[in-house]
Amino acid sequence: MANHKLIRQLARESGGKIILLVLDGLGGMPFEDYDETALEIANTPVMDRLAREGCLGLSHPIARGVTPGSGPAHLSLFGYDPVQTPVGRGVLSALGIGFDLQSGDIAARGNFCTVDSSGKIVDRRAGRIDSDVSLPLVSKLDKIKIAGAETYVRLVKEYRFMLALRADGLDGRLDDTDPQAIGKAPLPVTALDPAAEKSASLVQTWINAAQIVLKDEQPANMITMRGFGQDPNLPKFDDLYRLRAACVAVYPMYKGVSRLVGMEVLETESHYSPEDEFKVVADNWDDFDFFFVHVKPTDSRGEDGKFLEKAQVIESVDRALPSLLDLKPDVLVITGDHSTPASLRSHSWHPVPTLMWAPDTHLPDRAQTFGEREAQVGGLGQFSAQDLMPMIMGHALRLDKFGA
Image (cartoon, one colour):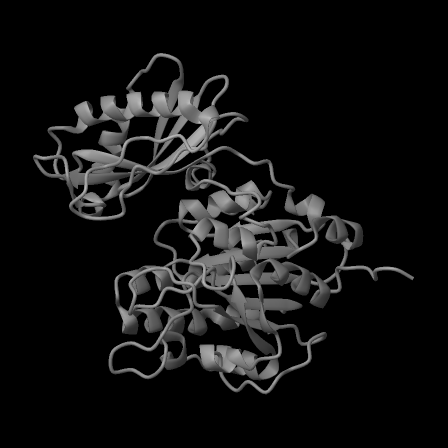
């Protein structure tokens, strides 16, 4: 686990340039007739060369055997403890779309869903409606008024939206209303602590009003809420690591987790490919010390059970990698936030393959390719994802010696 007091004491303002390239859901398992994982089967000559020149390992995002959500997994990669300081998905969604989330606000991530005549969910994502379909519905929900709190509803992307409540004395310790299953009704809002009872009542009042607004809509005739929370006021990257840090990501949630830790989010469009994202890095190379670059489709293909398509996404990143290498970073790390095996169609607890390339400071191991089984015997070993940032800082020569 990263020791923030120690890191803050040792961090230097000078040192090498860093790129942390995160392929969401990178890790996997063999699939059906394939004996290799998607990463192992992918044609990745550039990553394989970097593996031969660098060193590999496996990271555990939260703890061994624990399956992480995307938010906690990214906080771990950034060197924060998501168990000690949990952050609700709603906070990340709010920050991701640039909503002015104030201290004390509650935020939650909402999904439009489809329910049958008995109120049971038949589609948890309302057919994955497009943003142009959900935007008018979000506008209707934003007009709902309840006594005791101001409410704000904003579109996130497609079937996802953000709800924020603003009032005195709110507490974000509320359980999700998404039952995570088809054939069940949305759950009532439940306080996870007595101090959150007022908040639970306010949110339930709002949901009841939203149900009336949406009852005649199709397919988005109901909502579920998840990831309630409040801004935990985490220490920021510039204070903790003395890094000018930038985020290049397409999906709002990853912009949100970056803003949460004080990164500057650089402008992107929803259709950006890895090549496009890497160009954003190149265009801003002189202005920052640290770039977090996020690639989403590896996770999406895994969740959809599309094994070969996940491998193709990895190959597209590999083809674009020379443009990042042309920038001559001092440290390049390629990893994932968690594993998403196509065989499971979901996040999993499997450790995540990690490649560290720092030609001036690392000792290469004997890896020949970038893959899960090569990483099992790599020089980085198996480590907590929270230890990655200190390792990166060390290899970038950005930490002073401890002690005499």
